[in-house]
Length: 164
Image (cartoon, rainbow, N blue to C red):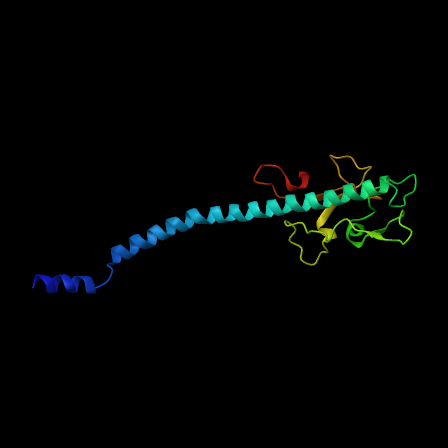
């Protein structure tokens, strides 16, 4: 008789209290996991921004070095930096090569990962600073000396993405 009573008790399933305790525990775990997932996603986008800035800035420096070495024709009043970002992927003719070989500085131009503008081209997602522009007030001009994010957000390190 005792065995049949225990068997009946186990066949009834969960009680309402057991179900509520389980749901409460799951809700607490979900509220803890959501901010961690958001921080992880933001951290990944920040890493993508760092990598993109590094790639573009390396391409700009390589273009300037090629101009200083005489591989790219420039006039005396030019800084030696590219006139736009597209030149880094489209390439320029090597002035030292008689066959007119092309020099490429980037395979492709990365997008700003914080730009929520799918209709913009990759080049339009970046803010441009010319060589003659002051660092605290970047403005575009005849050349591209540096790039910066157009995002108004603040990084996890407390610094604005525009200043990276």
